Length: 88
Image 1: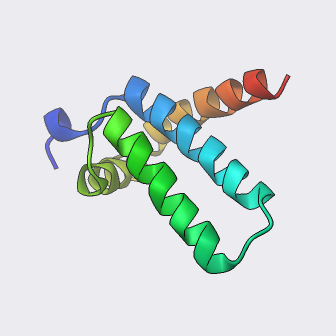
Image 2: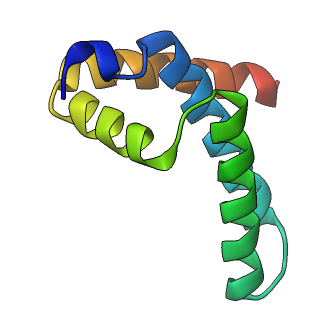
């Protein structure tokens, strides 16, 4: 995957922050596994639409960043910081 087609670090930070928030919301609901899966799918589709990306681009970008651990670490330091700020 060429670097130009990878989701930027700044966008990945926001995207992953939103995905973790959606995950926490789904986990906090008491519902069947099917309902949780539907909620995940709806939430992630909405997040991808917001950032104007598709699942394929996200997966390829995530693969790129996991193959570049320093960059992935930088992203998750900021994601954790964002989540911590929202939790306070």
